[in-house]
Image (tube, rainbow, N blue to C red; front, side, top):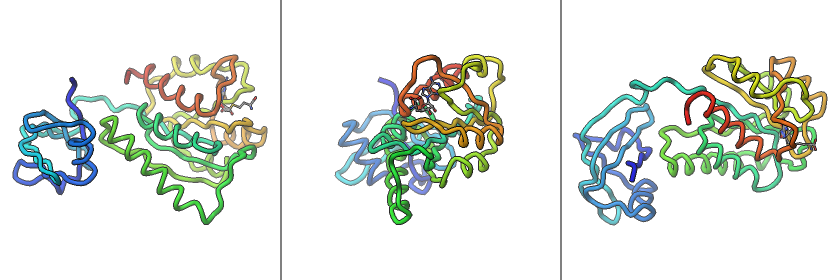
Length: 248
Ligand code: SAH
């Protein structure tokens, strides 16, 4: 079995021992049933990665003896940071997008109210939604062994989302685009440091939204002749990009 990686706080490491409780303890001991003698990797909020062996397991704590430490970026080329700009979809599709997108390496998620979004969020619900959504990415990151957690944020609409984008490559997935395929754009492109991808709600983008994104240098691209559901489009684009840019 491959060695699992867990997110920790750097404060838990002292004198070559990481002393872990709470969620990490629960995940290691109750979910994965790790025991003393198992090898693990730990990654802290500064991107430092530790390799070590579990030396002790109690009801509340796991002690890991650290055998080596390395900076996360050592030797690894930086993968493009992919921002998913997603018009709010219905119901639990948000959860699906966040969970699968985190597994597939999204850097962050920005939701916005699309003109044709059926789902609505009242101002007084926003904070608790954001808290919940950020918990989902945090849990998914832990589960898949990522050492960073994608941030989930909110923008009021397409225009605000488009204006707030400074990524090197910006794409809008548009079901009515006929000329420009995703493959054409991605294969013609050297690996960018950052990418932003806008995805419409169930009812798609309206022309005004497409024009807001275009005016802010988002290039309309097609994912082919079949119309994908909004959550499928979001998940597919991450898998495709990571494959093309050698992450998979
Ligand atoms: N209701 C629309 C489809 C919306 S699909 C219709 O029937 O025409 C939801 C979103 O997924 C779209 O706004 C787009 O961002 C993305 N999407 C789905 N299929 C796509 C495709 N073939 N090409 C580009 N984008 C697509």
